[in-house]
Image (tube, rainbow, N blue to C red):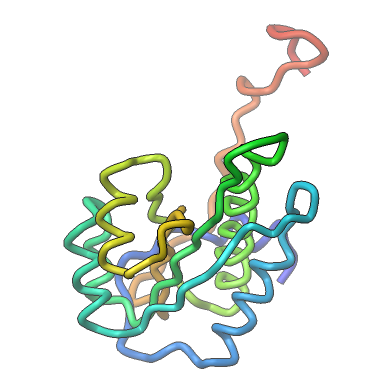
Length: 174
């Protein structure tokens, strides 16, 4: 599958089959995540693979939009370490966003459905998720990615909107 095709095919899938995700596929998803660009090559990310039914169910209760985790066989928590000083202090969330998108695209190629469930910057979501996942103080949950083989089919789509494109200066059409 070409990257552009994966981008168009990638859709939020909230209904999954019971089929577990192979360990090899999980490893490939994590390798894709760590292939993402990282400011100053700091790679301030960590990934927590969650396949424990009780934990998935608990996460579905503490995150307002995560109800699909009750039916998901797996979730990856994308976490980051923020830097409190210097020019590196704001890069971790951008690096985690790039890693998250890589997981979504790789999952699409593998036929795995996903939903990106944002946690950061919501203080409430961070606090509740940290507690459920027993994360250390220096780790911030950035996003949960719900994963499973789709029990629903969605058509590829583009959301291209020429009105959102400007050239050289704001207001000039491209």
